[in-house]
Image 1 (cartoon, rainbow, N blue to C red):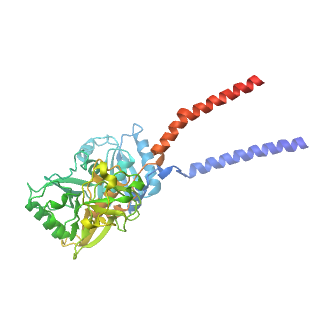
Image 2 (image 1 turned 90 degrees about the vertical axis):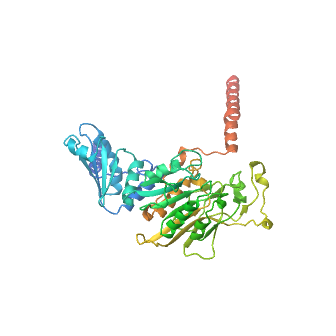
Length: 452
């Protein structure tokens, strides 16, 4: 009898296991559940991509012109499925490009697997299958059309296309992928800002602008144009006072230095590091660290018709230094009130807005930053500089839905950050301590064996 019960129990356990396996297979076939436990969800979609999808408040159709004879359709469907899990009204449709070659030529489709995205009557084309390119295409759909950004050139300004350390080529290339089109604006060839320009950028000129150029910029602002003005220490004597007067601001003399930089491990007091920001739409929810190599402080005029909001501000241990600074004597500088130096906190990033004088726009926006290096090729990779620059441009272009998108950044385990002291300790441990321990352990084992 006992043996019979044991056999029955064995059969029951086997049947129960088979039933559980069948139930698992059944539910796995009917329900799809995916979980990503990696940092920032990097195995699925980044936080930026998820935020862009949330901003698309209507259905999106993606048409893929892919050959059905290979595996490309499966690759595209699997890739788009990551987006469809978060946005159920995103649909994917395949078209065989070989069925109607004439239509393919008419559409200008030459790459197998080309995607055409449709949203609210807008269209974007994509021939590269990657999260970065597809998310950028969604951002361009949100903008509606490419934004024309004119960069003043001809007087030593930072170039939007070159790759020199002081130029802006890397940042502008990334912004062009998000729906911005950069064009040069040389007032030696043009007497005014062209119509349909969404934004003018004056990026740290090195020579005095001609009177006609300053007048054209002042007229552009007076007529309701949006402006980004990046100025640097030493730019006060470039005949730009009429523009400053039109905005109601003053660029203060000297270079802004911060006494607490040494505590943060910064050897140059002219390098301003920020992790906390005044409240503004540009900095809302922004918690990344930014670095500004050489900064001019800004102040407001007594009267202005602009709504002015500071969004970059130095610390309480900062001041405007009038004496020249070199690396050899950087640690010996001190605040000198008798010389007219101003004590911080001091603003060096101002956002200005007012009711637009132009009937075509509701609001006019201007940003003035007392440093142009933070977006340069040399410093763009410093912490949150790129993300802050994107927010500034999005706000100036009126794309408020894009301003507060979370920045894209990788997982922290992709980069090893270690101090010099920690590196020395690790080197000492592996080169000296660990070999000595192994040698001592080998000697102890040999001694025990001889005693035995």
